[in-house]
Image 1 (tube, rainbow, N blue to C red):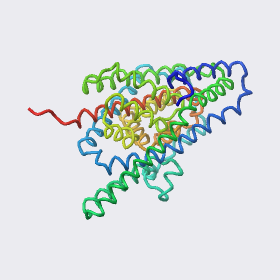
Image 2: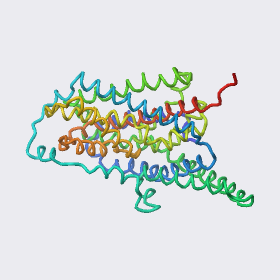
Image 3: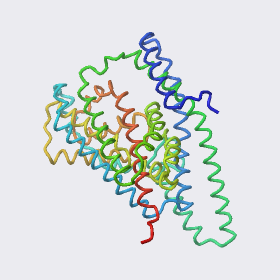
Image 4: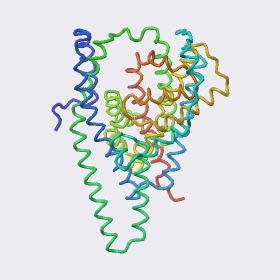
Amino acid sequence: MRLFKTPLYLQTLIAMILGAVVGGIFGDTLGPLSQLSKLIVQWIKILATPLLFFAILDGILNGQMKGRGVRAMLLISAFNALCAISIALFISNTFHAGQYLQLKAGAAVVESAKKNWDWTEALKTFIPDSLIGPFVNNAVPALILLAILFGIAGRVLEAHATPPEKEVYEHARHSLQLLMKILLKVMEWFIYLVPLAVFASVAKVVGEHGFSILGGLGAYLAVTLSGMFLQVVFVYQFWIRGIARKSLGLFWREAREPMFYSFGVNSSLATLPVTLKALDRVGVSSGAARLSACVGTNLNNDGILLYEVVAAFFIAQAYGIHLSVFQQVALAGICVLATIGVAGIPEAGIISLLLVLNTANLPAESLPLLLTVDWIVARFRSVTNVLADMTVAVGIDHFSAPQPAQ
């Protein structure tokens, strides 16, 4: 039972407000408090990684991921990604936020612009060093690949098994489901501690930087968050109401908890169990929910994709670097490639953005400037990613549902 009857998202909101107040009062003396937040989030990440693997494996072994659902996932994810890129290009070329932060390129920047990026680095994220490596390193791309391979192998072997062997496979599936329930229960205990982690994290950030960190990067912050807002309001609601004919009121009521939770922990992967529960309450089938939130987790990172395009343009504009139409399209393609290899963990967007800047030969030395407001942007990235998972799940469920007889 929860210690408080207050919904989790309200607990998180209260914790954020209290953290801001305490940070403003005590200032930079609260540095050690951040260790509490890191400890809670680290435990959630440790549990989320095997949960992701077993959820995918269970879905494949139990035949929950049919061909139609996979095709729907790819189609919807590609459409959403294209919309995110289009929105990012539109707002970047319309408002030119980078012009409000004029920077001069030094020798280090010029030298960095000459560097070439090895495209094979992106493929390495899908190749594990060992079978346990993806679990230890939270390497989601390799983890997903392993789960899919193991699941397909299990289905193939079961299809050719004798009746006694089929009973063994049946017991194995039940054991897998039991293991998932245990993981979910332990994860649930740590979820109850999230408001405490949010309080500690917000108090530290406000204590060290205050509220002046927005400063000259206000334009960048406004453009980035506006882009995510447009993606959610127009693209996602189009799928939810326009295509799937779901009630927007029901969807947003149930989406509040994963939204506030992901905002607090700054991780779409750590929000996985909360997202799955919310989708169940919306009426989405478990197969569609797992296909989107688990298998499609690296395809539904619209928040990170939109952020990367806007941030890269912002840096280019800040240095007075003009990008042609061809360069803009190429930059968007680089962002897509980098986003696919990103795990749903805190600060993953910064890591992938550095990859994008190096690939596009843009000055990466300016990245620390964006970090001053990334504690805000990162949380909205996670919220957008979670809503992308939920939207794709709704779409998959709509297209995979049995069609009524004519």
